[in-house]
Image: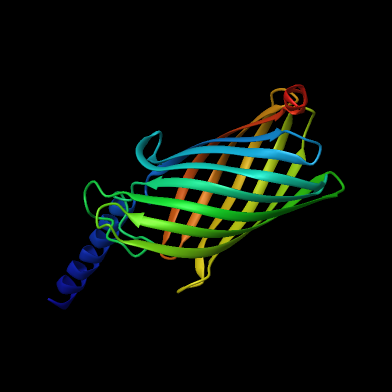
Length: 241
């Protein structure tokens, strides 16, 4: 009888774990489709443009829209300071956990966020390896559109990225980024990324990669497809001037 009881408890535990994975989507391979642009408008100034579409599953089950822009000041070729703004619309209904502390099991729930960020990038090279260190502070103004509740959150992020050219066309890209909350629990999330990159033209490149997104008590696997298009608009601005 004791063995039967132990077996039933074990089966119940396994079922509970499987049910949690189904709710959070941890068993699903999600996808992020991304665009990044650096549009140079003067010798020391450029505009950052960015759009991301994130899905819980492969190009389905919408999770998040992220739109971000900013003004970059190029101190020198290896140091860039940025002040920017982002708008984020999140549908969290596939997942049962939420760092914002709201109930994400409610149908038709959505979270809107207006975000201001300050950023500093440092670059250096060791042999053929190109390193980039990105430091970012974020002020996040978040609203739960279902309950009407709003909150202001602050966060710090640090990303170290390494790029290794393979040929003039192909390259490898790796990064690890940690998110630190400046209120409540310090650890927010960690992202580890690896990708194969392709230089399509001098201004256009693409990356096909894999992201492991780790939260406290949850891990997500994401396919990432990124397009990077850097333009030089100095001629247009000079003509207007």
